[in-house]
Each structure stands twice: as C-alpha cells, then as structure tokens.
Image 1 (cartoon, rainbow, N blue to C red):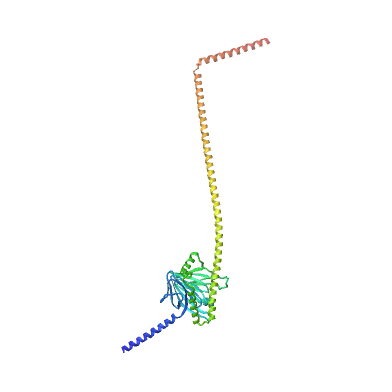
Image 2: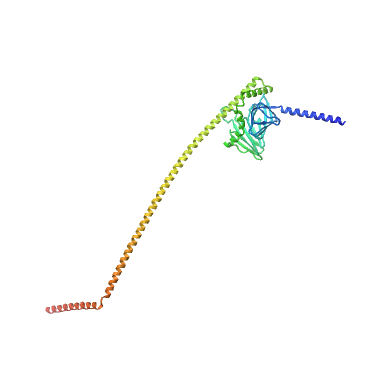
Amino acid sequence: MKKLLSVLSGLIFMISTSVFAEEKLTIEKQLVGIVGAISGTVKTETRELKAGDKIYLNETIVAGAGSGTQILLLDQSTFTIGEDSEVVMDTFIFDPATNDGKIVASVKQGSLKVISGLISKKNPDSLTVEVPEGTLGSRGTEFQTIVSKGKTDTLLIGPGKNNTLGMRPGAVLVGNNLGSTLLDNPYSMASMTKGKAPGQAKKITKNQLKKFNKKMKALRVAKLSPEEKKGKRKEMKKQLRKELKSMGFEKEEIKSIIKENIQKDKEKKVAIKKERAEKKKAKKKKAKAEKKKNKKKKATKKGSKKKKVVKKKEGKKKKATKKKATKKKATKKKAVKKKPAKKKKAVKKKAVKKKKVVKKKKKVVKKKPKKKIKKKIAKKRKIVKKKRAAKKKKAKKKRRKKK
C-alpha cells in the first residue's frame, strides 16, 4: 500500500509539474516584439539577447553598464532601453484587425524611451509605464523616463501642438495617488518622489538633457557602428514579416504596415529635425541679441571706465593744483609773516633807538645847571619890565601934551 501511495503521489507530482511547465511555456511564448538594435550585454533571466531575438511577455530585460537595446513591438511601438536598466513587459494585448489593445510596461531602474505605435494611435490612453513612484500615461507621443533611487524624471520629447506634419500632439500624464501633472509641451519634464505628488512641468535645462541623452549614448554608438550591416536589417524585416504572417496578416497588408511604419519614422525624423532647426535658429537669434547687449554693456562700461579715468585724472590735477595753490599761499603767508616781523623788529629797533636818544637828551637837559636858567628868566623879566615902564612913560607924555 505504501508503495502504491508513493507511486501515485509521484505521478501526481509529475503531472502537476508538467502542467505548470506547459503554462509557463505558453506564457513565455506570448510574443511581444523583436530586438532591433543592441549594444553591449543585454540579458533576460535565461539568455543573452542579440539583434533579431524575440521578446516574450513577462520577460525582464536587463541592460548592463554601457549597454542598451531597442525593441520593436508588434503594434509598431518602439521601446529603447538605456544602460543600467531593468524593464518588464507586464501586459501586451493587440488585435491587428482593429488595432485595439493595451500595453503596460514597468521600469524598475534605469531609463526607458517610448515611441507609441498603432495601439496608442487608436486609443492614446492604452499605453502606460509603471515606475516605483507612480505611473506614466502616454498619449500618442515620444517620451523618456529615468528611474533612480527614490526619484523618477520624465521628459516629453514630442511632437508639439502645431507640428507641420499634422500629427497628433503628444502628451504624458505623470501621476500617483497624491496628484498628477500633464506634460504637453515638447522638452518639458516633471519629477516624482516617494510619498509626494508629482512636481510641476518645467522646461528641461541643458544639463538635464545631457543626463537623458547619456543613458542612450551606448545605443547611439551601436547604431552608428559599421558592424551593423544591411544584411542584419534585412533579416530583422524578414522576421517581422513572418511574425505578422503568423498573426494573420496578408502580404499586401504587411507591405502597407511596413511602408506606413517607415513613412512615420521618416516624418517623425523630419519633424524632429525641423523642430531642432527652429530651436537652433531661435537660440542663434538669442545668442546674437545677447552678444549685442553684451557689446553695448561693454561699450558703456568702457565709456564709464574712461570717464572714471578722466575724472580721476582731473581730480588728481585739481588736487595737485590745490596743493600747489595751498603751498604758494602758505609760502606767501610765511613771507608776509616774516616781512612784518622783520619790519616790526626794525620799527622796534628804531623806537628803542629814539627812546635811547630822547633819554640821552633828557639826561643832557637834566645835566644843565639850574642857575643859568634862572638867570636867563630873570634877564627876560627885567627886559619885559623895562619895556612896560617905557610904554607907560610914553603914554604919560602923550597925555600931558594933549592937556
């Protein structure tokens, strides 16, 4: 009995494992797209990818340092995975007859660039990219996201609202449970962090754009490298045709789809080139205007500097003249002071001399004897008395004669 039970349990285990393996194989065989271009080492859980390899649902695509890959999906969407990235295709539903479907991809880390295809053209809200901080809803456009530790930056590339090709203007809805931000202007970006609502849409700076381009640098080198020949591209096209045939497309439909895809790519490239050319022109104009302003500012600065130099020179001259004048005045004052001092000294000397002379005279006068003076005075008085007596006698004689 024990042996029978062990045999039965073994059979059940084998059946269950075979059923699980079949289910796993069916999931793995659900085709999503084909590897278009590759650079460096890009792997899944079970294999290393090469150009032309098939990509299946729920496969985790891991690109190492200095590596990258571009995946062409069955609805003509393109997913470009940058270096140090990990991306999973969670959901891919596509009906070629009606172009209805749904695409859901998740980026665990690194960078992913998306160009939407037929599914988004039919229903713009049918393509979403999940990131650790929230979700990115693509609305028929080209955008890129970078997932780093605790932060996700999303850049809308285009096309713009008034593009010359009449294409649907692109937009990306960046959102989580706390809020959402709509990016609808080309080369605008928004950031999300854990536990916070998405930031406002801002125009990307040059340094930020360099960071986005750096993530895709390895793949650009791979595209431009001479190793990637036309034969590989033809093989890729053949594989795409086979896959489209297996999906139920006819030859004419396959040709039209491929032509449409090529035309769209060309149109997108032309639109991007035009936008870039217009931006370059605008930048050049701004640069010229800034140069003119800078020249004017420099000229004004030079003029002001010259004026300052002239003013300084004039100030120096004035100071020198003032100093000279003050020196002259000081010398004159000194001379004037010296002259009156000398004159005063001479006058003083003269006064002193006069005083000495007067004193000498006084001394001389004092030395004359007093007796002589008295005699002279007495003589003068006698003479006066005599004269008066003579006058009186004459007067008496005249009186007598009259009588």
